[in-house]
Image 1 (cartoon, one colour):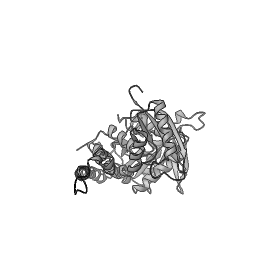
Image 2: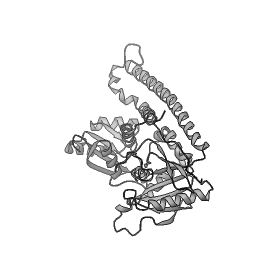
Image 3: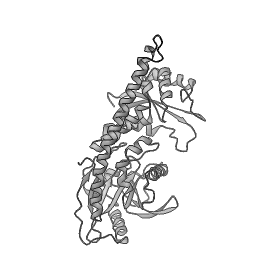
Image 4: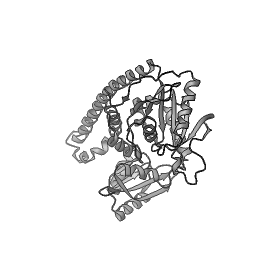
Length: 385
């Protein structure tokens, strides 16, 4: 990637079952943010080092690696405390950031709607508010003075903290207004008794490609993490018996999604919470799909959507080597003690879409929600005001 800053990726295996030993996902996140990974380093620890997360010996190894490869930044696959981040930057003499900030940066680059931008700004402010001491470390030497217990440095930190807290309050107020607008749109759809479906899934599972294939929309879709951040809702006509349904494309999930983002994106994810059905899109070509399904289920539980009926859509069948399953094949998949219908398809080629439409129609008619003519449901996007 020409012009992109060279970075070193660091991961610490603390015994978590989902540890990414190759740092593949962190590398994809870095590339999505416009960075260029030049080296990767992993190590094992029973617990993070309180001061440097990796310990002084490993920190020195990272410093030498950065000099060798000319790295301009160090990226950690885990969340760092403000003190660990500050200590590492002093030891390595380079900017150090963690997975949380990286995801925030990508979200900030990608958000298009007013609501999305507000949600990201809130999460970013909340993240920065814990790191004020690091931002103003250059003022530490200004402290002192006869009979004085603080100084300009301490005053500046307090001023900055007050400014950030005021900004957080203003952003929350603006976000509340946007939530009310979205709630009004949702109530209009509910009054029409429109069956609502939300696409959920791990980031880069192909949700937007599937959304576009189903409703002939032009939502942004790309083979990268977090290509779509803003919820888009369209009407999908399933035929004379089932009529039209409302279908929404939502932000992709990822492991260790920063809690600030889960909270900040509550309004966007609310589409999933209030849906009649979830289309859980899975990248069937990814060998780690069971862990990705588990991560999505965990976030759905956090936002109160775990009990909503699901159809598992195993996508990207065209990318599965030695493909043994025909597109359109239907079976059942056991998830959290429940058996869920599963459809195999390729949103890219369109193979298997008819089977998914048939499955949706069957579920709607089974619930007695079908109509004899299509419902004229309006189109909504999270940027509408």
